[in-house]
Structures are given as C-alpha cells and as structure tokens.
Image 1 (cartoon, rainbow, N blue to C red):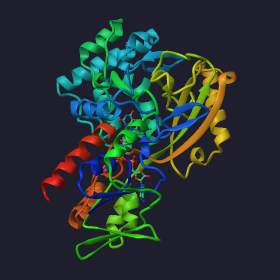
Image 2: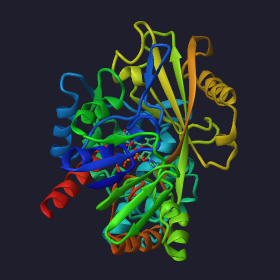
Image 3: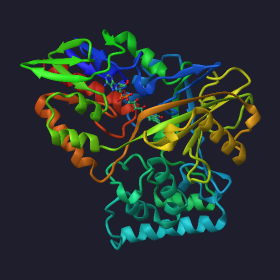
Length: 434
Ligand SMILES: Cc1cc2nc3c(=O)[nH]c(=O)nc-3n(C[C@H](O)[C@H](O)[C@H](O)COP(=O)(O)OP(=O)(O)OC[C@H]3O[C@@H](n4cnc5c(N)ncnc54)[C@H](O)[C@@H]3O)c2cc1C
C-alpha cells in the first residue's frame, strides 16, 4: 500500500487514481487550502479567495467533471486601487485610466524598456526587481508592480529570483500597451479572463466531488515521524503507526524533514531555509445587495491598508451569500512571528473595516458578519537560495524513494490546476511501474 502524507487537493487527486493508497491528514477533514467555511449564511474560502482557471484543457475538464451542474461561469472584472481610483487589471491594460502624467510615465517607460531589450542594451536581470524594470520599465514598475509585489511577498524584490515569473506575471505585447495608453480596450493574462466557481459550497466543492473516488483517508493524523526499516515505511502520529510499501509526501517540506527520523543535518537545514509566507484572511458579510461589479481589487500600497487584495465572493456565485447581501474577503500576507499573525481577530477585522470604509470600498454600517482565518503555509517565496535548498531536499527524497507532490510538498508556486495535473501524472507513472 502507498502512504500519502497530506490530504489537500494534491494528495486526494493522487489517491483517487491509485489502486491501493491511504491518505494521512492532520486536520479533522481533508481539503487543505481548498477547504471552505460557512457562517451566518455566508460561504468563504478562508485560505485565500479561489477561482478555477487553467491554460490546460485537461485541468478544465477535471474541474467540470468534479463540479457537474454546481458551477458558475464568470468573466474576470478585476481592478487595481490606484490613487483613489479603480484601474483595470492587469495594470498595464488600464493605463488610460491613470492620471495622465502617470499614463505617460508608464507608457514611455515601457517603450524604453522594450527598445533596450530589442537593441540588446539592457543588461540581463539577475533578480526580480531588475526583471521588473527590464520587462516593464520604470513607470509601471514603480507605480504598481514593485509596491504590490513587495507588499504581498513581504520580501525586497531585489532578494527574489525570477524563475517563478513565467506565466505568473502578465506579459503584454507592446501593441497592447500603446492601445491601453490611448484607451482602446485590451485584455491581459487571458487564460484567467474566464473562470469557474462552484455555485454552492465554495472551492471545497472540488474536494467533495473528489472524495467519493478516494478509498481511504485518515483524518486527525498529524505525521510526526517517518522511518524506513528494510523495505517498509513506518509513519507515526505519536500514538499510532501505519506501514506502507511506498510514500508520497504532499505536506510542507519543512514538516516532512522534521518527521524524517534519518534525515541528515544539511537536508534538515535546507528544508528549514525554504521560505514561505503565511496568510490572514478577514471574511465579511455585508447587508448591501450588490456591493460592486468587481471580482477582486488589488491594493498595492501600505497606505491602503495591510491587505494586498479584497475579493468579492458573492460576485462569483449568488449562492455563497444570503439573498440581498454580499461578501468581501481581505487577504493579508504575514509571517507566523509577526504582529499581523499575532493580532487579535477583532483588531484585524477593525483594521480592514476601517480602511475599506475610509477608501470607499464598503461601509462600516453594512458589516453584519465577520471571521478571521490564519493559514500557516500560503505562498512559496522564491528567494535567491530557493533552488539550491530545494535541490538538496529533492536529492535526499529521491535517494530515499519518497515522492514529493503539491504546492508545499514540492515548494512550488502552483495552483489547483497544476496540483491536479501533477497528481494525475504521478498516479499514471506509479500505476504504470507496478
Ligand atoms: C491565498 C491563496 C489563493 C489561491 N488562489 C487560487 C486560485 O484562485 N486558483 C487556484 O487554482 N489555486 C489557488 N491557490 C492555490 C491552491 O490553493 C493550491 O495550489 C492547492 O490547494 C494546494 O493543494 P496541496 O494539496 O498541494 O496542498 P495543501 O492544500 O496545502 O495540502 C497539504 C495538506 O497536508 C496537511 N498536512 C500538513 N502537515 C501535515 C502533517 N504533519 N501530517 C499530516 N498532514 C499534514 C495539511 O493539513 C493539508 O491538508 C491559492 C492559494 C492561496 C494560498
């Protein structure tokens, strides 16, 4: 039997395709980051607002298969909050909505960066900050991309690598920038322009669709030790031992390294050095029937508030909020040893409500329900040592015969579509090698 550590989407997809597997999950129900929460009639995705989209038709088909009729189809209507106005997202597709001097600065900077690349006079970027200037020019970088990215990653852009940006940071053609500057509508990041969202149950509806296909899930089993004796893996939560012929880990790499009884010191150190950000979400129910038309809004500057984004789940599906109401979810990235994580729930709610009321996003008196959630592992940070640390851990896992899978199982910036595709691919490989 194969033991799968972690019952998030990755572990469940894999388990659904293996003939003989057991999932061990620390929480009292599976789903990981794809769990949802309902209170006072409002349903939220407490580990960060989710939408379902993919460049890959196989992932789209998988979503559709899991959701069946329980699906809403939406077109993205996303904004960047910039100097008190809502500018179309991606920012570079909304240049004509900027104050005219900022439009000029952004357009000119983009063209200058473009020409420098074309003529080979721009030095190759060695970090994320340099890449932003190289790719977008000074205007777009300084008005939006740099403050936003430093706010969400809580890391200076000069200390981040660039391997993750492909497909993650929108990459517009020059023609779109010129059109955007003079006000001809364009769309960027088009594989995300249309998305799916479960009509009922939040993103956890995916998990509910998957669970009937998974034979064995042990919940409330926190993996604390993993050891191999002969050809058998023994996994324990401190009170009970489970034995497996093979092991796949989808739990965060540092958790795995701490549990591996025989892990060498340098592997443990590399695992602990992998950087990530945690997340606090503030979920709010509002008495207003339709707050706005937006999918979500980015807030790039520290002056806006601690949050980098506020999403409006009731605009994804009208079944996730009681009739005549709407909902908002603010996301704040943080670390588990910082003041945000340690803040009292009521202070976090008060901060978001006060800032949103001040900025005109919604009114304080409309808030009728509020909750806070904390997510220890939310974002992988691609600092400059990321690759080296990850390679060291991977080499050890390979040598031991442990397969790594998933967002924090592989410490990669992947969405649900990649979790699904990688889970399916690994299952095919493992079943094929039997
Ligand atoms: C803010 C945010 C927004 C996102 N938005 C989107 C989006 O819009 N669209 C999209 O497609 N994706 C989105 N994602 C990404 C998506 O949530 C993940 O890619 C996916 O859910 C990861 O699944 P996973 O199974 O790899 O990891 P996880 O969901 O993290 O699962 C790992 C599991 O391991 C368990 N575990 C941990 N330690 C132990 C232990 N010691 N023993 C046993 N179990 C353990 C955890 O409880 C968890 O259930 C978003 C993520 C975040 C954080």
